[in-house]
Length: 182
Image (cartoon, rainbow, N blue to C red; front, side):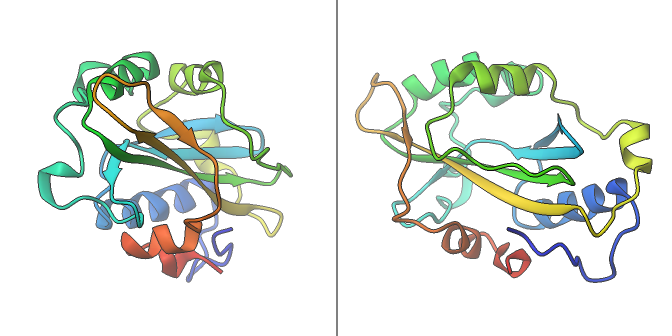
């Protein structure tokens, strides 16, 4: 979970979204989209290539040219999946920051492709006005989910990595976001 007391606490979900987008941009995540979730919103980052310890690859290797990111508006998941098949061997990750006042529990199971398809179909570049104006209360929590994929050989299908060998806090430390963690 990310700290729900975000320094000088924002008063609205729009303020929280602005703060989180700013923190993500300073960590190199400039291409992120908003998604609707019950009781709030989520921010999902572009898929990046990482090393086995969770650090982003340096320079241009972080966002592989093999993943034709700009080809699909707001990241068409099917196109990204096809691009990952052509991507080099290695590890890949996307972060999802969730701001909500509704309880939820990640299942710990691999996400179904239809789940991602539904998210991407609804992705927007900015929070809707009504969501921006929603008060940020003590009932809201800010959480982060990390989705990691591995690619073992050229033309192989990417596989969802569902293990706890690389803690979220450690992965966020590599991109200067660990200060947001409790």
